[in-house]
Length: 165
Image (tube, rainbow, N blue to C red; front, side):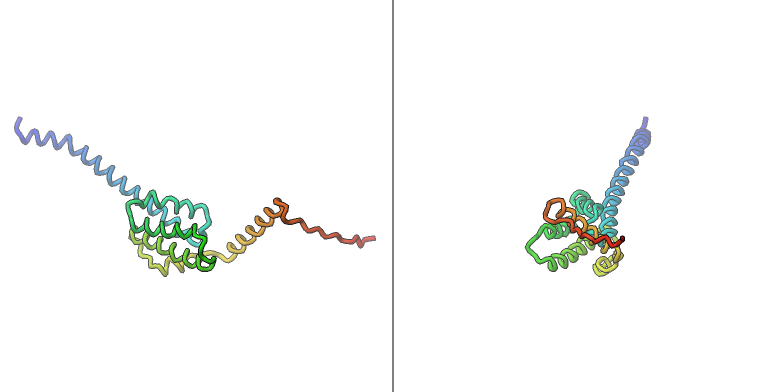
């Protein structure tokens, strides 16, 4: 056998192996991007509902899925640090929280090649007023029930006279 025969045999054997490895690599890269996009899309969809389980779960996945991106990790750490900061007034904390969340989402959008500026991220979410009212009512009911069960509040009872005779 001549050298070109050996080269042909080698190419015939090695080509499918290389093709499989390239396909695996591309599939892996696609899966990584899809997980990052899923986190970003969840955070964008829930940015007006930051207490939702989906939002919190997506935040907690940032360390895992964006570990290769120092810009996103830095923005996440800054936001995370604020979330547990009790030194600011509620008003200051709320303003800073929004700014840091917008910054985090903007960093993620840039990495994922979405063309969103910070103003768009901050101002374009939709949250019906009724949802806020329902949340407030549920919060009031929950707090009242806890006070009742803890014995710090009593059920008001009003005695009415029977006027039917």
